[in-house]
Image (tube, rainbow, N blue to C red; front, side, top):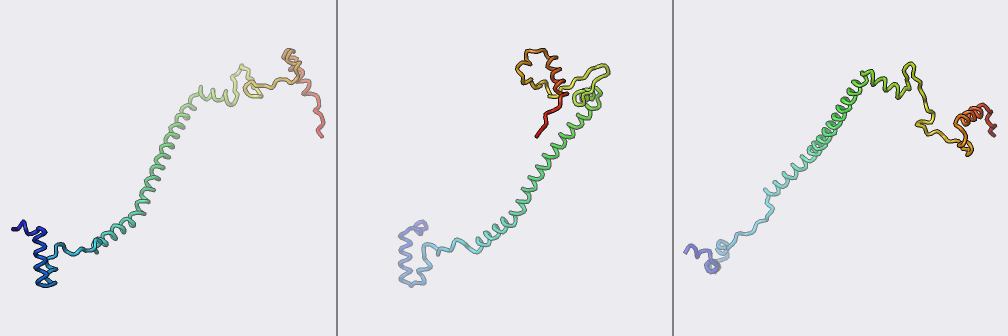
Length: 160
């Protein structure tokens, strides 16, 4: 009979007999307890604590992330500085070699050894201006050279 205790017919019979006895007994045999509000005081307090923790930890977490980013930037800068120091040490070692210093002096300062003849092009790498007179292309180069020397001696025309 215990299995029959929770059947619908048994519940209705118990409810009917409770109504006969009075409204106070009917509440005792109710099938379900009264529904309570889902948001209890404990749940509200727990939600408040969780929100407080999120708010309290948001700023420190932001600072932590920012500091981690700054640390990564500083490490990259330190790595670049180490590479630069390494490059400068290699350059210093090369500058201690007399052959390398001589090569630099020849390239940048146009130094020559005794007995050598140094030449300097004024217009850079050989892209000298061609004469504008079409007849000068048929003449030998030395004639054009002397014409340039003669024209350099003549006074320049007066400017207005």
